[in-house]
Length: 74
Image (cartoon, rainbow, N blue to C red):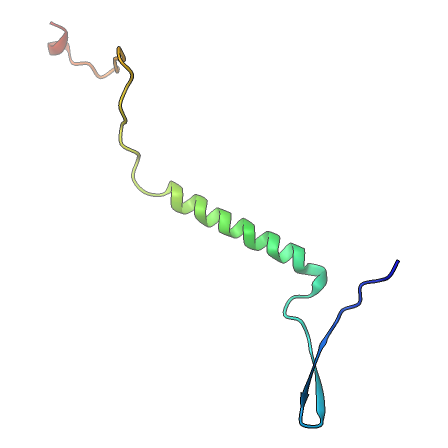
């Protein structure tokens, strides 16, 4: 099998050829993107779960909460 060779871009400035290295080493590209995705998910989780408690929604018919006052029963 052929080995993956790291390709460097060549950039010519005047008569000098400058080899441009990639920003992220190809060996660590998958690890980098995995960490980025996990960080984004954590940010969404934290933003979604901070703030006030949700308002009480409608209850089904016949539902009685434990906070019934005794005046309402008599």
